[in-house]
Length: 75
Figure: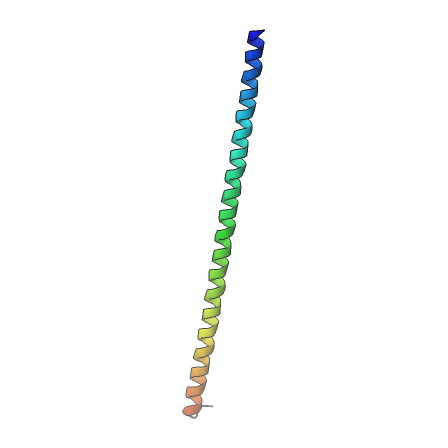
């Protein structure tokens, strides 16, 4: 009888340990997913900001050259 009780206890401990490992793995995956998402959002923001800067610079250059062309009589 004692042997049966110890076997049952061993199985319960193994089951609980496996559940803990599974839960820890799921939690770790959630952390990785959240970090990945945050990194992607940051990269998207950098890309957007860079594109806006490029557009603004191109517009300013275009206006500058247009003004210069008018002053020199090219337009």
